[in-house]
Image (cartoon, rainbow, N blue to C red; front, side, top):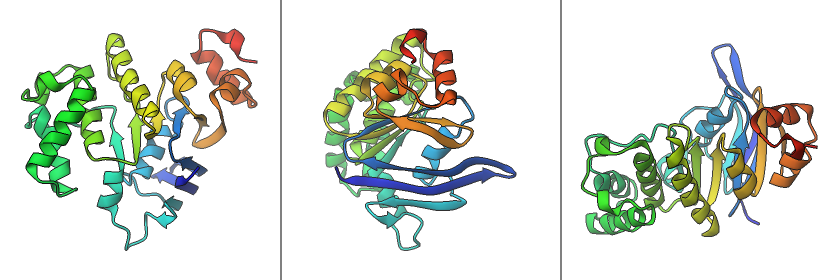
Length: 250
């Protein structure tokens, strides 16, 4: 399987607090990698480093073998290929649903308006939001905003999608809708990296689960390895706290 992203010896601090310590892992084409761990373990910071929303203090991130911090590297082209869906949606409040899904295509990918519109309509239909194309984003519920945010990211034809706790701001009944869309994208072969507290999603949809604690990757493996046979005491403690069915933790 082709390796798309390689993270090597990544370190990130905020003032005197080191949030990521020597993190390294690879992402292969078609994988769904879920990153789990307690709040403050560095999960979201890792995603923000992958998307260059945070500058790393040390280490490398390679995209198809190219260092994304190289001064000749095209960061805008990279961000269009490695998209991000945020916990807080980050829609433009002054634009309609349709315009939210068109603007990045026109500005970054240089698609013409008609192409951008057709792509936007296609993905809004896929996420069940075609009836809302002319609504302002401020008129939407949280679940609807998140579905639009996913459609907007998909419109950019990304190779990889990063999800930062995509369901944490949603009402429980909305969570299933968003997770169903993500399951469909997995079946279509989209590579995804998902920071999540949804343990059932991590167990049922992931190709690989990464458990982080205190800024390091403590353990990673298949969902079966992590959820049924965790090797590290820290992993076992975390899962026992989060999973109701403690009997499945060996």
